[in-house]
Amino acid sequence: MTTPNAHLITHPLVQHKLTLMRRKDASTNSFRRLLNELASLMAYEVTRDIPTSEIEIETPLEVTRGRVIDGKKLVFVSILRAGTGILDGMLSVVPGARVGHIGLYRDPKTLTAVEYYFKMPSDMQERDIVVVDPMLATGNSAVAAVERLKELSPKSIKFVCLLTCPEGLKTMYEAHPDVPVYTAAIDRQLNEHGYILPGLGDAGDRIFGTK
Ligand code: URA
Image (cartoon, rainbow, N blue to C red; front, side, top):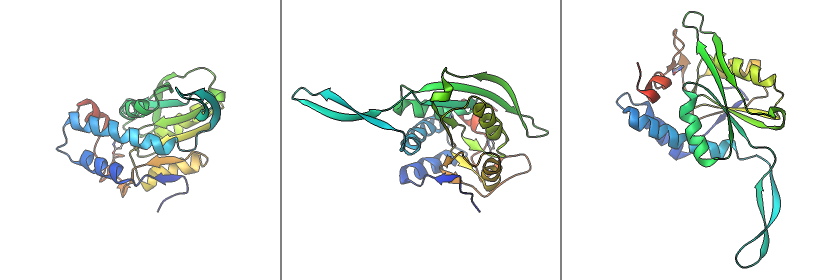
């Protein structure tokens, strides 16, 4: 069962890379490289509808018109620490984007989100936001991050993850039905520790080689 907020990215390159990342014997090096490549592919999908305007330019041969991205720079908001993995890939295709960070950790007992860091660019009310976090699991961190960002009245908010599950999508949809969730897969379920099954394990540990 899925919810209307889910946008599943089914491109063969995205699916191929995700499958390689899921394997438990993927090294830190290849996990990180694949995440980077995957995030840059997802950036195309997520930015598909950003506004453009026409400007006049001069080629070496003549004057012509072409389209450029309009308005204030997009903001990628990375949920620390695993969001960093997606952020790097997104910035490789949108290098002018601004970047915000939200530090949230999951209380291991209650699985609720606790904020410890929040730093955003200026003029957030004039910007479109893309929140990035590889795993939308319980949805608690994502809901808390979006709640905080809504206080700044941005023009729009989208959420990008690699993997999610019906529970995470539902939690997000109930709290923020206006926020689309872009994902490369909707897995079967959450386990009792808040991990996605079949999933890929702890994304942060796999990106940074920690345990
Ligand atoms: N966070 C992760 O890193 N992995 C999961 O499966 C769930 C949350």
